[in-house]
Length: 154
Image (cartoon, rainbow, N blue to C red):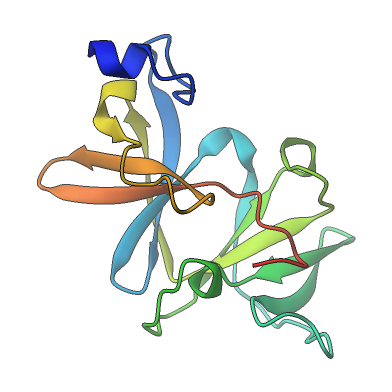
Protein backbone atom coordinates (compact mmCIF):
# COMPACT_ATOMS: atom_id res chain seq x y z
CA UNK A 1 0.00 0.00 0.00
CA UNK A 2 1.30 3.46 -0.85
CA UNK A 3 2.40 5.67 2.01
CA UNK A 4 -0.11 8.40 1.13
CA UNK A 5 -3.00 5.93 1.31
CA UNK A 6 -2.03 4.52 4.69
CA UNK A 7 -1.72 8.04 6.13
CA UNK A 8 -5.17 9.07 4.85
CA UNK A 9 -7.73 8.85 7.70
CA UNK A 10 -10.61 8.65 5.18
CA UNK A 11 -9.46 5.30 3.78
CA UNK A 12 -11.88 2.77 5.25
CA UNK A 13 -10.06 -0.36 4.13
CA UNK A 14 -6.66 0.50 5.55
CA UNK A 15 -6.17 -3.14 6.58
CA UNK A 16 -5.33 -4.10 3.00
CA UNK A 17 -8.25 -6.51 2.77
CA UNK A 18 -10.54 -6.64 -0.25
CA UNK A 19 -14.08 -5.31 -0.04
CA UNK A 20 -16.82 -7.04 -2.00
CA UNK A 21 -18.81 -4.57 -4.10
CA UNK A 22 -21.83 -4.89 -6.36
CA UNK A 23 -21.36 -3.27 -9.77
CA UNK A 24 -24.42 -1.79 -11.46
CA UNK A 25 -25.23 0.46 -14.40
CA UNK A 26 -26.79 3.91 -14.51
CA UNK A 27 -26.99 5.32 -18.01
CA UNK A 28 -23.69 4.52 -19.69
CA UNK A 29 -21.67 4.52 -16.46
CA UNK A 30 -20.75 1.76 -14.01
CA UNK A 31 -21.10 2.31 -10.26
CA UNK A 32 -20.60 0.09 -7.24
CA UNK A 33 -21.74 -0.28 -3.64
CA UNK A 34 -20.31 -2.18 -0.70
CA UNK A 35 -22.19 -5.50 -0.71
CA UNK A 36 -22.49 -5.31 3.09
CA UNK A 37 -25.23 -2.65 2.87
CA UNK A 38 -27.40 -4.59 0.41
CA UNK A 39 -30.29 -6.75 1.60
CA UNK A 40 -31.51 -8.06 -1.77
CA UNK A 41 -31.88 -7.34 -5.47
CA UNK A 42 -35.31 -7.61 -7.08
CA UNK A 43 -36.87 -6.98 -10.47
CA UNK A 44 -38.38 -3.55 -10.91
CA UNK A 45 -42.13 -3.63 -10.58
CA UNK A 46 -44.95 -1.16 -10.33
CA UNK A 47 -44.26 1.80 -8.08
CA UNK A 48 -46.80 3.90 -6.23
CA UNK A 49 -46.06 7.57 -6.80
CA UNK A 50 -46.01 9.91 -3.81
CA UNK A 51 -47.49 13.38 -4.43
CA UNK A 52 -45.11 16.31 -3.76
CA UNK A 53 -42.12 14.03 -3.19
CA UNK A 54 -38.58 15.20 -4.07
CA UNK A 55 -37.57 14.58 -7.70
CA UNK A 56 -35.20 11.74 -6.78
CA UNK A 57 -37.94 9.74 -5.03
CA UNK A 58 -39.60 7.58 -7.67
CA UNK A 59 -42.25 6.24 -5.32
CA UNK A 60 -42.77 3.35 -2.93
CA UNK A 61 -43.35 -0.35 -3.32
CA UNK A 62 -44.30 -3.18 -1.01
CA UNK A 63 -41.38 -5.57 -0.58
CA UNK A 64 -42.13 -8.53 1.67
CA UNK A 65 -44.71 -6.59 3.66
CA UNK A 66 -42.49 -3.55 4.14
CA UNK A 67 -43.14 -0.20 2.44
CA UNK A 68 -39.88 0.67 0.69
CA UNK A 69 -38.98 4.11 -0.69
CA UNK A 70 -37.53 3.83 -4.20
CA UNK A 71 -34.80 6.37 -4.98
CA UNK A 72 -33.53 7.21 -8.46
CA UNK A 73 -29.76 7.60 -8.00
CA UNK A 74 -29.52 9.14 -11.49
CA UNK A 75 -31.01 12.32 -10.01
CA UNK A 76 -28.50 12.33 -7.17
CA UNK A 77 -25.44 11.61 -9.33
CA UNK A 78 -26.69 13.76 -12.21
CA UNK A 79 -26.78 10.96 -14.76
CA UNK A 80 -28.82 12.31 -17.66
CA UNK A 81 -29.17 9.23 -19.81
CA UNK A 82 -32.28 7.14 -19.76
CA UNK A 83 -31.90 3.42 -19.27
CA UNK A 84 -33.79 0.21 -18.86
CA UNK A 85 -34.39 0.64 -15.08
CA UNK A 86 -34.82 -3.11 -14.68
CA UNK A 87 -33.50 -3.85 -11.17
CA UNK A 88 -34.01 -2.57 -7.64
CA UNK A 89 -31.21 -2.73 -5.07
CA UNK A 90 -32.77 -2.97 -1.61
CA UNK A 91 -30.61 -1.77 1.25
CA UNK A 92 -30.33 -3.43 4.64
CA UNK A 93 -32.12 -0.99 7.01
CA UNK A 94 -29.63 -1.83 9.77
CA UNK A 95 -26.75 -0.64 7.57
CA UNK A 96 -28.34 2.68 6.63
CA UNK A 97 -28.02 5.97 8.51
CA UNK A 98 -31.37 7.15 9.87
CA UNK A 99 -33.43 5.52 7.15
CA UNK A 100 -36.19 2.99 7.06
CA UNK A 101 -36.56 0.69 4.10
CA UNK A 102 -34.88 2.27 1.06
CA UNK A 103 -33.95 0.97 -2.38
CA UNK A 104 -32.42 2.29 -5.61
CA UNK A 105 -33.81 1.68 -9.07
CA UNK A 106 -30.94 0.98 -11.48
CA UNK A 107 -30.64 0.09 -15.15
CA UNK A 108 -28.90 -3.23 -14.61
CA UNK A 109 -26.82 -5.21 -12.13
CA UNK A 110 -23.54 -6.61 -13.41
CA UNK A 111 -21.49 -8.56 -10.86
CA UNK A 112 -19.95 -8.76 -7.40
CA UNK A 113 -16.21 -8.11 -7.39
CA UNK A 114 -13.41 -7.69 -4.86
CA UNK A 115 -11.85 -4.23 -4.55
CA UNK A 116 -8.45 -3.76 -2.93
CA UNK A 117 -7.79 -0.46 -1.09
CA UNK A 118 -4.92 0.42 -3.41
CA UNK A 119 -7.33 0.31 -6.38
CA UNK A 120 -9.52 3.12 -4.95
CA UNK A 121 -8.67 6.73 -5.80
CA UNK A 122 -10.27 9.05 -3.25
CA UNK A 123 -8.45 12.22 -4.30
CA UNK A 124 -10.96 13.13 -7.02
CA UNK A 125 -14.07 12.86 -4.84
CA UNK A 126 -13.67 15.61 -2.25
CA UNK A 127 -16.51 17.72 -3.72
CA UNK A 128 -19.15 14.95 -3.71
CA UNK A 129 -20.08 13.49 -0.35
CA UNK A 130 -21.99 10.61 -1.99
CA UNK A 131 -18.89 9.26 -3.77
CA UNK A 132 -16.51 7.03 -1.81
CA UNK A 133 -13.91 6.86 -4.57
CA UNK A 134 -13.07 5.75 -8.10
CA UNK A 135 -12.11 2.11 -8.56
CA UNK A 136 -9.45 1.76 -11.24
CA UNK A 137 -8.64 -1.41 -13.12
CA UNK A 138 -8.83 -3.36 -16.36
CA UNK A 139 -9.00 -0.24 -18.57
CA UNK A 140 -12.14 1.06 -16.87
CA UNK A 141 -13.28 3.18 -13.97
CA UNK A 142 -16.10 2.36 -11.55
CA UNK A 143 -17.58 5.02 -9.28
CA UNK A 144 -17.90 3.70 -5.71
CA UNK A 145 -20.91 5.43 -4.16
CA UNK A 146 -22.33 5.82 -0.67
CA UNK A 147 -25.90 4.49 -0.28
CA UNK A 148 -26.81 6.90 2.53
CA UNK A 149 -28.84 9.31 0.42
CA UNK A 150 -31.77 10.64 2.38
CA UNK A 151 -35.26 10.38 0.99
CA UNK A 152 -35.75 14.07 1.83
CA UNK A 153 -32.43 15.42 0.50
CA UNK A 154 -30.39 15.46 -2.69
